[in-house]
Length: 619
Image (cartoon, rainbow, N blue to C red; front, side, top):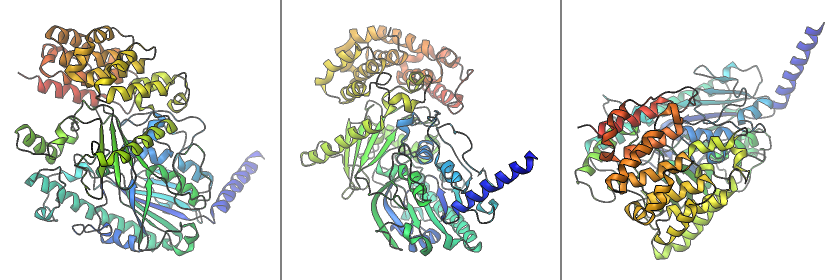
């Protein structure tokens, strides 16, 4: 007798869910990879995008939409959680972190409200899924698989515009390469023109795929019932766009079309065929979806709904970030207000164009670097292959390619101060975990999630770590005393930034802090030892370099040190250049796999670093 009762209860629960969802809109997301707002509806006369242009004609385009991260996994992690990845310990490319038990991913809230949620067909989250997230998540996922009358949320993601397809050869360009409008930072070569033309060809292919999905919606009689979004997952898959938190890497196209039935869910500035200057980020997508479904976004979500019942006023600033990109570490934070873009570099000693193996598969990257090495380029085409300033500030009205740094401009000091303050406020509001070396994000968390650890002042004393990072990255001689104080602190992250500050100042830092760096070679924290060893290895005497290389090699085995420490040590060894030659055979023998390696930080990154180092050290 119990079975029928259970079946009735299940049926009742199902009926209740559908009843709750019956007066809620369907939502369709069409997404594409690695493309900026190079669409006809955004004024790009070179583009050929009739289907998305028609969608925009009955909807609204957002002119100031940012992906928050300039690469796929952190950007998607922002969307799925509604929380900035630097707050959850998930900012690094293909990393993995648990969510707090009280958090859910946004499709889970929609499913509880009766929605049928499908994802076709990429996830790529840096957060571990807290239980079942999707009803379907595969290449066959479709709203057509739902039960009759059930509201749906569906994603169709197109990869034809991905970086890997833009450089795929052979390809006969449809868009005329001679008519490409090149950004000021790219050299004018046949390879670069071909890549940009092919990029536009792929956008046209994507537009056709988007049109097919929109036609399916219309054929099913659902167009009048469904709110449609289109957006790209970050900027173009070209060097200095993808992976870089400039406007060129963060700005995405975003179109929203709301049918008349649901016009009460539109904000006051929504006018079909119009545009909005509201600042919108991927951080806002989860609360916006919940708001459209009549669900009040939970307090932990860090964005603002820009549609629906719980729509909020727009923010004053957008925020972006860059952490580890595949096998290379970096740390950049970006603030934008629609006109100005501010970048704070916490590792200014590293060049912009660090050798990421995947990026160097693109012809533009290779020819650009070759021309730079041959001394055939002039600014601003040289900047990408040089070290960075501590800060950058750009005026998009006069400099859309972001090549004229205004950080030292006397008339822009007020803007600079305002953007600095916005950056600082954001760091403390979200409790940015990026000031910890990647491995410490996980080791300090211990039995709680990184997010929860970040809110524990005893485990993560952000105030003094942030102060040390500011002194380290300022490039100011007057901050040296603060670096020496940092090296004596009881917190390993503070000491790490003390050593990093001397490394960032290169030969001058080593000359000023030689004794402190030698002491740091024996620090209990591996990341402090790595930073000190890189400083002495690159800018010390030959004897100091040999000692430093020994320290780095002792930490470079993933079997002994774990993948995060090994990545950091190998990166430092690669930066020693010829001073690492004596260890070439030892480097070649290093393992690239170990037990209990994180699933998303596999041997591929270690392998790429080792291969690049060995190639550079070849006789």
